[in-house]
Image 1: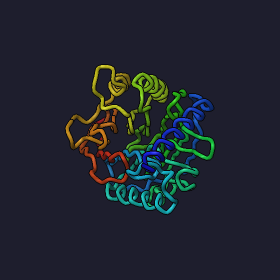
Image 2 (image 1 turned 180 degrees about the vertical axis):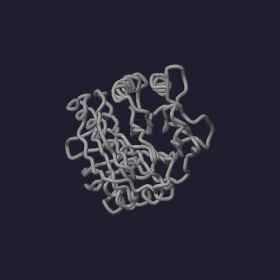
Image 3 (image 1 turned 90 degrees about the vertical axis):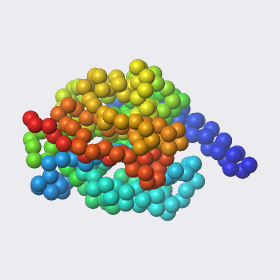
Length: 294
């Protein structure tokens, strides 16, 4: 009974905090932090990219709330995330619900913690929610230098927390081609909000005019004619890896595929799979990308 009462209290507190923060944020470039090395740490012979997307749930793993965990447990959970990422041998990682120092998740920088344990010297973090001792959003961790970085906070969508994305350019290994890589998080509660957020994303990416890899938590399984996933694919001519069924599910609670990797026509999927390891309430998605003949 106590657990039920605490769940109700925390849920109410989250709703109040989300509404309050949303009233103080505006759809615009959000605050960002970039740490970038001057050279790639990829092997010189590399011609493909291995990318991973994962919503890390503020370091709470698959628990109810990060507020119920101490700093040591949060670090333990993020160490498990780092170990999983190391196993994938990823070149670029897109993370969502990743915290800068925040009172509800151990008060330390989660991107730096994971980046150091995964040998990812290039890190871009964007804050889409910021205030009252809390700062979190999306991030890119990369073995390749990140250039032209942007953090974007979508228009407020009360009563839910603000969402957004970060984007940066990388140079494809062994080529002069510049590619934009996006870590995206869309609203979970309303399809109309997700559609509006996709329009904001499309506008910015069209202005940058680069081939693009979009990774993230779309909070939609892509079904239905009005899916924001299809809107994004149509607007930017992006393709997703075709497949359905249990092996593509990324959110075990609802058994749906909510996390996606979309790519421009200049690229192809050499491999694509979802990892079964439970380090969050979402599962990680891994893709091996190749560049088509230019």
